[in-house]
Image 1 (cartoon, rainbow, N blue to C red):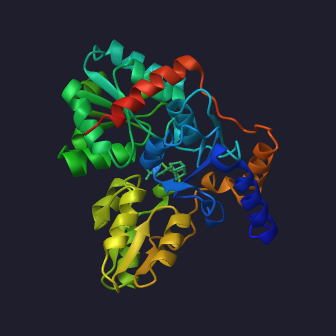
Image 2 (cartoon, rainbow, N blue to C red; image 1 turned 60 degrees about the vertical axis):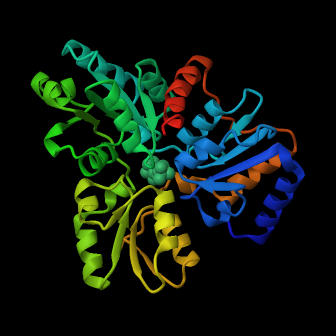
Length: 352
Ligand code: 13P
Ligand code: SF4
């Protein structure tokens, strides 16, 4: 079993043997059994900034999902090897926008005479080739902690944004943080001819949102908020911007995982919080702040199944293999894709 003290000891030993040659990054949604071995923890933005923080480390073990490991490979030197302990740790949201689908959408926008009007912005939660597509076409990457700044930058360049692949983050940022109306947003459905939109709708829209979503955050509903308000008097509802618009509208606070942690750190003792994000993090926060009443927003269990693929047995296997000189599960991005994805990532990292 994952909690097996023998496995904990093996991970500790392998990590010790690798010393400074190893740098372990852990996303906040990782299991506790894994996060205990992370040298740094963070949300997607913090981990992207920190990936290159240890240039001397030969191996970067990324405890997170595939698109994060790809970004780490792009942002680190050629000599550094990025390892994802389980290759099945993907992201269903990232899989909702494939390169061919995005190219098809772009061609339709060109056909509608909008080529010079639209700038593509992709959420970090996308494959490297989607980031490269944005880099090649003048656009940028954003994360949930800088979406507003990235969109403001994008609207300074052109009048419309194609926002990939999370419709909720795009809509919530545009409407709740930037004062746009719901009518300024349209949704491009990659499974319908022409995205399911008319030329007039495309011409009128300011935000063209891709029809993608997070299968974890998408499970919270307006009813989850009403229900917790009935159950917990005086509760503060704190949610991630990947939640549906109606959920964010009903919540008291919204922000990335790093923001959620900071909000709870600063919350007064005795206050009650219902948190709408991934369950590993919510459980950890409940343990970190025993003086506050921290609960999960929904009654049903809501882990990210792909984040959870990285468990202690996979981590031990990766670390022990590396300590024996065997590089397993290396994530590499080809040179051209990496170049253009880096252009889009650097535009994000340069945001004020
Ligand atoms: P952040 O790390 O930007 O909060 O994103 C959450 C998420 O879903 C990561 O997969
Ligand atoms: Fe993807 Fe959502 Fe899981 Fe994040 S929490 S990795 S967006 S499915």
